[in-house]
Length: 228
Length: 359
Ligand SMILES: [Zn+2]
Image 1 (cartoon, rainbow over the protein chains, first blue to last red):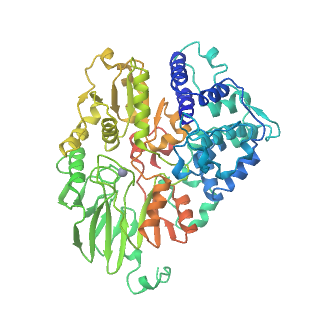
Image 2 (image 1 turned 90 degrees about the horizontal axis):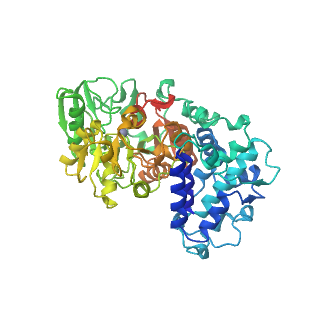
Image 3 (image 1 turned 135 degrees about the vertical axis):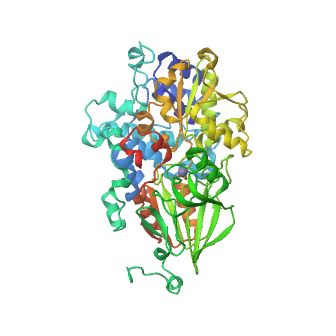
């Protein structure tokens, strides 16, 4: 599903409607089943996440990363879903694996064992290669950020189509500002951001090495202010 | 200062590391050797790791550096960039005062070096900027075992994992194939990054002419003069708009967001940088095709390198010091942020679009 992740990234940054259509057309031509089926479901809003809640995502990442490093990273990136996706430990040898053949990769997302991506039988089960686990992590956390912002994850979530509304908005090709799909999931449905979801750009504008209170304990010789 | 450093037995009979190298306002000062490393202010004797402008500045009395670094300084600042110069090769050792200085490849850009400073039994490696990833345009990074390792931390957070640069170039080529009527503009820092992207394009089998923004020409031709194969390159200046459909042009990052881009047919703006890992960074720059290609080690590269040097003490500078210092301590290493001012990521300093320009 790497190819699908690439498509989503590209759609997110591409402002022109016709160019978006070209990207989508090319994807469905190029990629085989079942991956493009999952992709179609994702794009049309037919996937739902019953178990992906922020607390679960936080537990999963906490079990895999140093809390100080996670804190500093989250502070820098500014978005929970993106931070988790970027930090998610790699399964070294199998990074080129296929999308695992599985009856419902979404429905059981929360039951997946952390070592699932290392299962040998998962490799090459599908014609398209991809870091399925990573993509799912991204999907889960997308909806998590969503619920993180408003409902604290108490409700099951449906993924809205990243395309929905865009075609309408995209009537003037080349001028529609877009956010990436994960972002779109957050913002299109929940226009009022919680304090925790301040725009990443605002966070990024801050001096990045003032990241965390933990940092102060690392040494008495802090970098001079000018350094940041 | 005495008593502050509680070293192991090995150090107690020799010198404390900070007696050998100490951060001062002008940069990293080696008192027993009588020189500064990558000084940010004019000094009598400078030893310079590589040609990026935040490390290699004009106005020093004497400069010791690799041939390539000296050449790049000459190209940027003119013939009289220093009172005198001295060339040192990788692997060569030179005695300066009470210390010996040895240069090792840093894998960052052409001519970039780590500088090993040894005094009595203590060896400190100032690695400058470095990367442990393959790069067809420069000598690969060499691991130098040492007692104290001074590391950059430009991408010192676990979210920064650069992946394989050749995969990013494949993305660029796929886009060129999909949009043959559009021009592709690739923002890339003019020293090192641009040439690496071109070389990767050639490795991927792209053999059409590649166009260059005027600001790219001098340094790129210098790379070619050093035997780096970059294929056919053409200045983009004066080329008709329609003729640029389906082509790739390399430009400094700042140029990809200004009026200059109007000369291209419906350009796809790409940007080659390690910062492209984070979406907000790509959006800030209005990039349509982020390419995660970096001159710096990523988190995995930094931590793997630190561990492999076998150094017991790590000094962390320019970048995300806190996270890397924390990681070092969690591995049982002594570590501290190094208070150096004036160094940044050259991509950022070339394009001061954000408050983070100096970081
Ligand atoms: Zn540099």
